Length: 129
Image (spheres, rainbow, N blue to C red):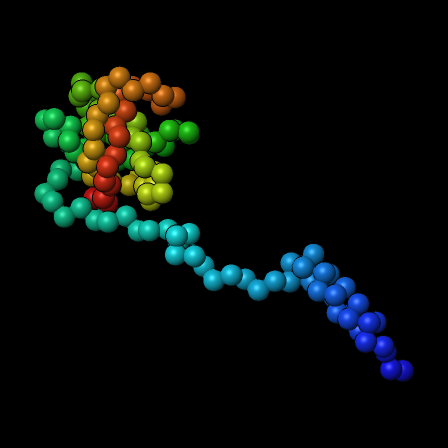
């Protein structure tokens, strides 16, 4: 049986619609922006825990307490701010996993009012330690 041209076209269109509904599209190649960017490694001579006198950098362990991320920069409770400050990593930057030791540079905002507490540390750069 020979089908007429309009019937063949109709079947092709139906097949295409069904394919789209079923998700039969070619996968797009991964976008470079969607790939996680590895965190660079600190090259300076930083202690495992510590901070600059002016808090221009902090070194310590990342602590997660949903929804906040903190940096324990001193294990001593008598340290400034109890040795723990919430860190604000810029959107789009790689987020350090909990438990990692990192070195951050930025600005301590002593009067920041957010859900994670005050003071907050506004991170301008983050490196693995």
